[in-house]
Amino acid sequence: MHPLLTILYYRLLGAKIGANVSIDSKARLGEYDLLTIHDGCRIDRSHIRPFCVEREGFFRLQSITLGRCVVINTYTSIAPGACIPDSTVYGPHASSHDQSISKSYAAYNRGLCPKPHWLLQLFLGGPIVILVLGISCKFKTLLQADLSLTILQIYPGSSVSGL
Image (tube, rainbow, N blue to C red; front, top):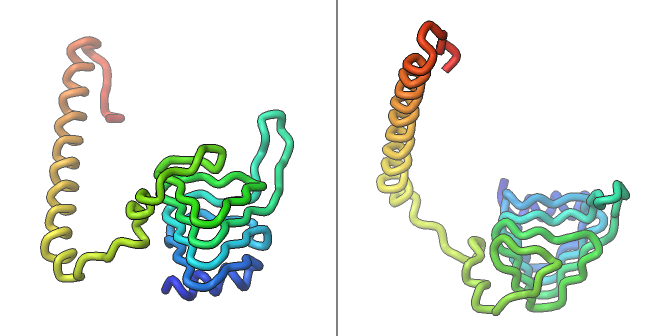
């Protein structure tokens, strides 16, 4: 889907989303009617859900508010009840319980980086991905064969057909 259609979809589900907001397609949002995202926010692949289960088994359902120009980087979790102030930056693998980091880390948000030209992706990135997948499959086959020989040496007469 187009990013504008994704934001429209979230708005139709009840989220309050401001202008010029960028949400990665792999960001995990939930309970949309409890989300308020102000203007200029950048949300990378992260986890923003106003619902959780506490250690004692209690459910917690509270709204989440992201202020203006907030940057949420990759694999960051925002807890229920969080109210993130304006221009806050959370680094990769962080939580809303952590301290915010320097604004220079906003440059690591993938939503702000331009994507390479599609020809570069096709003729350079594609062959590299195919090569890596081919090598990893070959090593997997060799590893399985080596493991099965090791098992047969340790336990003669055993069957390793399941490997």
